[in-house]
Amino acid sequence: MIELVGAVLLAVSGAAAGSAAADEIKQQRLALQSVEDMLAQMMIMLEFEAPTVQIMLSELRKGSAPEFIMRMPENADPERICEAIKRCPDGLTEQDVQKLCTLFGRLGSADKLCEQQRIAGAAAYFAERRKKCEPECRRKEKLAKSLGLLGGIFFAVMLL
Image (cartoon, rainbow, N blue to C red; front, side):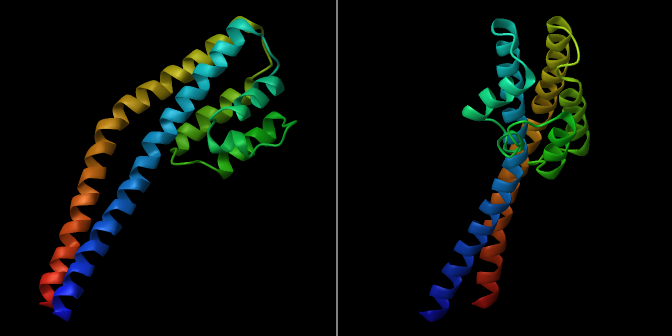
């Protein structure tokens, strides 16, 4: 009886480990979605309000912005913004971080049309990245959950 309880606990712990691994993989997909949503909000703000970079960042903080936006100081200059992005990548690749640093480093240095084009270019990049990443991430999530459960069952069988 004790062996059976131990076997069930091992199978459940394996499933929990697989679920934790799947959540970590899901974080990458959600980070790309979050950045894409943030850029869409920035486009809307530029289209209708023409705010400064500081006003735009404070408005983004009020909503559901990525973690690096939430951790930025109120009056952040482009260097501090890039530091915040690099410090808190949230599942983004090095190339994604560089793209965001380039975008935020140049914000506020040109006219409205140029700013819109920069943000639209970055939004297109992140939309394409998300489309390419999403099926692969979903497969990896499913695989992690399955392998966690199978690993737990394997250890349970070894116990018996």
